[in-house]
Length: 262
Image (cartoon, rainbow, N blue to C red; front, top):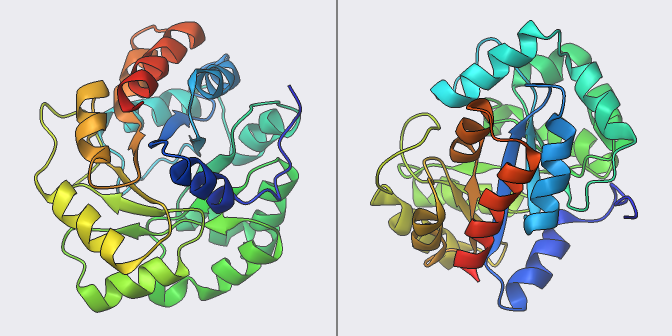
């Protein structure tokens, strides 16, 4: 499988898939949570993930719920670092564009130019930095863009329309709609705010709108994708992996979501 060039635009790939009638599926893996984590990426792509988030383990996350926090702690206990995660990605043929999910502390500690350069060198196509305020992210966005890294911005249900418009304008790759106010994690039902926000975002932008946070299983994925362009499924997959599901098993779960969306 040929390696994706990190310069390939996520947004272009997702637009093409969406315009062809495909609902988009973005999945997630915490980097380094166990030794075979890169194989999970490959299995997800083979099963139909259109893009994959890779979470850099962080000891004090503000948006990660219990499942992703547990995965991060396992990774940190194994000695995982940003350098080790990027090193494992550098020579990996995944088959789907990768989006680094991280926190401002890690970006600013390395320096925005250096961090963007290291992502690009590892074959990463985009980045999500949820705790970097819009008013303070211009330098990162510029440095990221200069290295071919698309910055994906998040929009919350309570975001006012004027700010929502700025987020849509400045987000690249896709616009990440947050289904609910709170942290990530598996939930029995999809928040009612999901459809409302998806419709608001779709009215403001033609960029791919992908809804995430709390999407648990194929049924909820279909529900979240109806008013939007697709979904992010993270904690539900990570819970299975933390409970012992191997890469092939995780791939089967992604395949079930892909089949339901199709």
